[in-house]
Image (tube, rainbow, N blue to C red; front, side):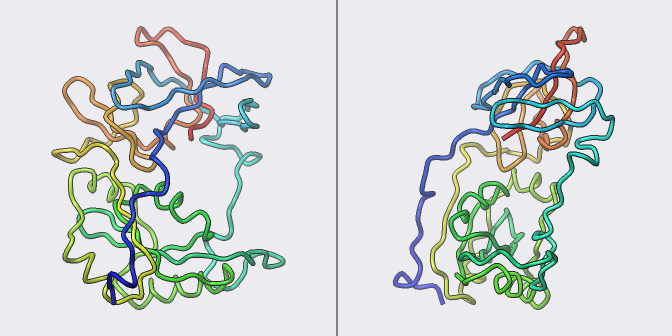
Length: 261
């Protein structure tokens, strides 16, 4: 049950900082990076050229890679096995002994997801996913228990454990169905809920496109929303990784998108 004594609705703990693109001029040798903060109103004017492996970031230094595989080659691809865990550890030895949170995430209008994360990363994880609302429903002592709970809820309820990019893009032009969300929360002993204010709302679903030209409307998770030529676009920032950047004149700028935060 959700009751004022059981669940406290809070604003996010810290102000929502804008996302940023990290741009590198490195070709063969490590070089410091430049950060482009994606504040609303920021103008981007880059063409996207050839794409290759984005290499590695070490602090603010970019180590480039010349491999053609994108966004990362086999030497720079890391596999997070915990993302596939359902309670049976896929590592040689289980190491997730810190407290974990099981949470619900809402994406407008009525896509509801169950997920797990380390307890201290709960709000950060919800922000990374671009959730409109979140609810903390369990705290457990380790990742194995959390993954078991997540797998059980995903298998035996209408909750999903993954939300695709096209669903998140559609949510940019919708609001969370409050009635459906509250009905879902009634089924759990909610610890707390969080509502996120992303600072913008689209009147219609943006066009899916991979561009780096236009005026920034805002960011939501890893979606970058741009206005360009009278059209609103939604860019999955992961699709920008590793691209050579060019000036609008198509003259090569000799720099590449190494990563984004």
